[in-house]
Amino acid sequence: MNNASRRRIATFLLIFASWVGLLTVLDPTNGGFGGVQIPVLKYMPFWLSAIASLLYFFSSKGYFSKLEFSLVSFVSIMILGSLWNLMFQGASLQESYLGRAIGGFVLIAFLLISRFEGEVLLFFRFFVPALFISVAIMFFVLILFRVGIVYQELPQMYQVKAILFASAGILALLWLKNKKIKLLMFLMAALGLLLIQKTTALLLMVLLCCYGFYIYLTEGKKKLLVSFNKVGIWGLLIVGVLVSIFTMLIAIYGLVEHRVNEGARENEVRAITLQMRWDEFVESPVYGNFFTGSPLVDVSTLHIPAHSDVLDFLAMGGVISILLFFSPVLIQMLRNIRLKQSLSRRNWLSFTILVSMLVMVMNPILSMPGLSFVFWMSIGLLLAFCPVKQLPYGRNNER
Image 1 (cartoon, rainbow, N blue to C red):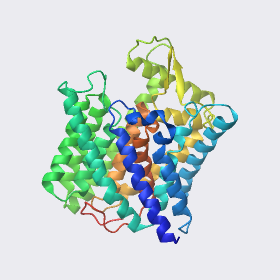
Image 2: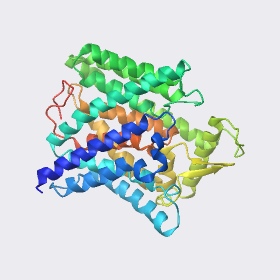
Image 3: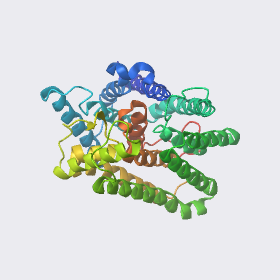
Image 4: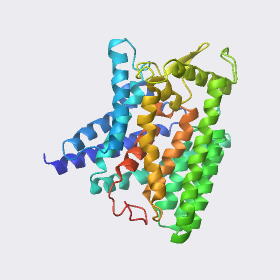
């Protein structure tokens, strides 16, 4: 088998992995249509990405850049630490961080695929329609839910999956050519966020509408784009920082006591888990526990995930891991701000990463393979600066 064949097999593995991830997201009960109970099925997108990474690695030349190496190091720490916990400390797969850590294979796969222009084009020809179809299905399920036809026993629906609505809305504006379909997809994404009726979704709807208006103002107007480009991205960055600071204040000062019963309100439980994670970080702020701890916490009779992937990173990896993870992403976003070019794929990737991080501050999205796949994919492609000359479903020809 030659290198080209290996790469093509790897690309189809990533395509299938993305489809599996998006399919599990469609389940309103968060059960992945039963796949959550079967580890092989639940983590299938990650295992497929790991195989694809090996195929790309052995069919390519070159090394990771410094920024890429920083993220690969972060992923390695997560995987090795959680494996140690699983193999030598007797933790179960659910009690170890491994289920979340192996999502890093998606990042590595997209860092490697980005070296091959044709493979990236092939992936997006299959991924973009699948994302739009998934969002459309979730939108119609939300309508049926709100009119009282289905899933009335669920207290909430698609709350964390609001990330995909926001991402698809911007992707439609930047890449779709047909103006009517573009507008329809954007409105579907915005209304879907409204129908979710959760604070997180409403925040993303505001960001989506503001950024959509920014795209409308700057489309085809290079001078106006140069003036507004920094303001648009910087605004999103500032919002992200403010929300993160607010959440950290909740964790530090604690809005509720450390006593809660099973019938306590969701926000009280959330605040307690955040403060518990912060306390763990304070005990070992430099290196945490190297991801040898559990992603689950005990709150009264509840045994649940902590409600923040960001605080999980802090508590388990300390400042070292946070720097390895956030520094490359922020540096690349700042580089993107400095590029005085027309709107491109990078803008969509940056927006997807930002809204994902906003949700990660208050929700554990890395425990959901479908959302985790999109998150790590976006980071991998943004950092790689893939030299794609023409992308499907779009008008932009930049890298």
